[in-house]
Image (cartoon, rainbow, N blue to C red; front, side):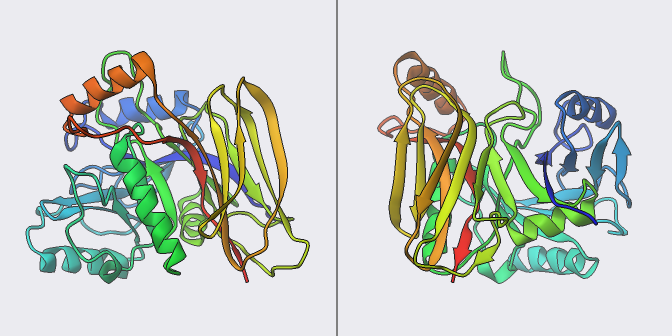
Length: 329
């Protein structure tokens, strides 16, 4: 009998076949050295892996491309696309035609960084009925926080689109290593593409800062994010993490209420809490932190350089990890 288990990967990667600086083979080796289980290769308007998924030293390499134009970017993942490259879309009709075609071939559709100020999604989000949405793109920055707030508001409105992260890797900068930053964990039966995309579409996902970062587990009995449970009078959910760093804050939300908060004044190992929940709807968890001092100054310098920070803009609480919701009915 097959059992679900947590595996890790990156949902957004580029090679020299678009505007990345690593050849496909160099990137695959980087993914292997990072210890990933799967990776979606998403060159702009080009399908690098070809028609079929394949395994590189244990890493599932999945076909896909990032449909990229001035109106926004959207990933399509899947086999048997039958086309290697596409023309850059220019009109809403171009986007719909392309997405409809790839969906007819069985592709998973994921809108990328919808609130990124430089790559804003300018089309009707719900009109594309995406299977997932990339709310955390590249290392954490202000626009990712704004996107998380938008996603949470949609949850409160009863509109759930599973949330993933993607490094959007093109190259490393200075001392940073950006592959799988962030890392998407999926509770899947295997690291085959069919199982991974099915798990993402169901919302069996949490996202964390990197492959070596602390994991964040939310459960209710044997249920994981994306699952639905019947609410009882004495219901609790369990939230657990490998560790919390000094200054990080764990928050648990039951709909719009923050029902649990734990602030780490020092590094704490193997954190675990049972938390009562009382309202139908959903429960989700996240770990955040606030940049201060030299780190805040370094962030402002770098983010301003890449047009992701305005002079009068505050730095919000950044995310270190977050879960998709468990639904309570």
